[in-house]
Image (cartoon, rainbow, N blue to C red; front, side, top):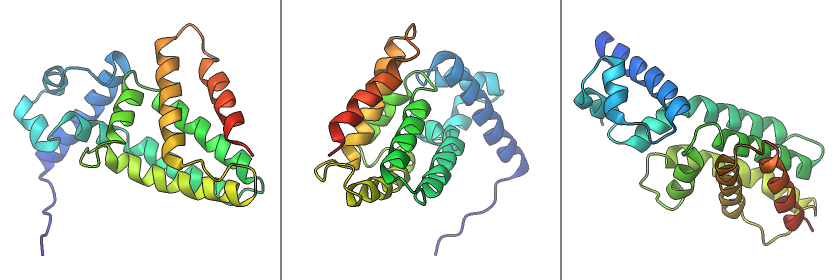
Length: 187
């Protein structure tokens, strides 16, 4: 049996400082922000960053856990909605919004979905399960084609977020693309 010791107070402070700086750096520079700069701005060495977060995806996973928690909570609320298809659409819109919040996040999520060893799978796997429940309800209601998979829908939402990221002058692009996509999955 492996027991995890609680972090020392200084290690906990470093961890929290790294998360705060990474969140700001990802917002300002995208998810490709230099890890060395994040460590320096947090007042720690790069070795300390890697002790807490062994790679970029582990840091991204930690930064985005609050958003993932919110998306999972929203999926549980929507699972009780009277209109399963509308619930699925609303949740997919929230996914597109999340993936578009940080430049590079949609691309990272797309690549992580193909790599089960990626630390970002800790974000993807629960979202995939939550989305699958919403999709199944919509399919059982006869509103969505039976051959549609949650994997395909999540890849499409990330692709839409990526397309919108490449066209910042068109703030309505993501919603238009999602609407077009969803017309194709309905029965």
